[in-house]
Image: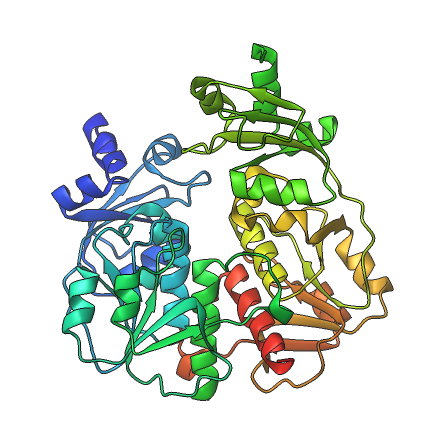
Amino acid sequence: MVTKNDVKFINSLKHKKYRQLNNCFIVEGKKSIIEFLKSDYQLIKLFSVDCSFFSKIKNQVKIENSLLRKISFLINPDDHVAIFKLNYSKPIDNENLIIALDSIRDPGNLGTIIRTCEWFGIKDIICSNDSVDCYGPKVIQSAMGSVSRVNITYLDLIKYLKSSKSKKIITSLNGESIYKYDESFDSGILVFGNEANGVSKEFFELMDYNISIPRFKNNKFPESLNLASSLGIILSEISRKSI
Amino acid sequence: MVTKNDVKFINSLKHKKYRQLNNCFIVEGKKSIIEFLKSDYQLIKLFSVDCSFFSKIKNQVKIENSLLRKISFLINPDDHVAIFKLNYSKPIDNENLIIALDSIRDPGNLGTIIRTCEWFGIKDIICSNDSVDCYGPKVIQSAMGSVSRVNITYLDLIKYLKSSKSKKIITSLNGESIYKYDESFDSGILVFGNEANGVSKEFFELMDYNISIPRFKNNKFPESLNLASSLGIILSEISRKSI
């Protein structure tokens, strides 16, 4: 039995405030749910139009299509909506390359970044406290299950960078060409500034290196690349060196 | 004077059907409007909260903030909304590398792709007829002005590829590593399949080469990369060879 209050509760989870208050978040779509089920994340409840698909899951409630449409955040809901327990507090592994994001605001971009990081073997992403929450429905959707495996930590980024002894590399519009940069990327912190406002002075002062993606023949336009695209290009450059 | 019908008309332009019926589209935000004004696109009308910013533009109408909110597609409107004339039919330049997109559906992804293509010097993008329209508000917004300079053509992609004598390269999950592929990319057609369904058999049969972005240490996850990210990585690989 799913009550009106249940629907209201699930809908409230699109907001960070209510996710944190209730310590849970929503995952939709068979593929993503499967990946979260295989991970350390703990399932609270699964709502399914067809209970035979996840037949071994006990805390499952059968729902009608009409109800699915009411609780889903998707335009085309995919038969199942799962509630999982939040899990923010895993330790950061400083032995590997860490990706740091300053004030990332676009949930689709963050999801794409998490997915790209996983593709290239990154285990840890750290985000400044004012960044968009990685448990929002749009992030979960565009990350395609990667949120279940990549460790994402929110912290005071400036403070963290100041106290860290790791090598710090920033990506900006005026650094050394990534095609020429040949330092090792086995460990350290690779920082990406805020897309709208660029990298602040305070960040530059904390950095050991500044790298850039060169434009084609010194093109004047566009002004910049999309953040997730820049990250993909740079991680690919790092990856090609280790292959 | 802006009437209720004008508001209705402008709002209708978020739909492709009405853009094509009226042969026009919306550009918002100072930066993007400046870039379209500098291009071949023809301005039909500019609605401004502050007319002094584009003081030389004659077909400009002063509007109040309350009206701006009604006609803007943005959550935080940026003082100006411009209507430009559509311009689909520029010739394709076969001398350079062309990017081909099959059934691209996500407008934010297409916008990012157009922006990334321009960064790496691509002049022409061809899209299958069922792809999302490049003049939709979300594409214009995420392309950050690049739609004004990159030539985007909609066509029967299979037919075009069949008749083209150019070298055809596809990006898939099981091709040759882009880090090892050393054919020239000065011309030809670089094809990206549909993100949800992958590359269809019909496409593979038309191709001369099949390339892939290798995963980190044969990672099993994620299943794929975001389309715009893949394109950025591959164009960067091409670019690094010519620098």
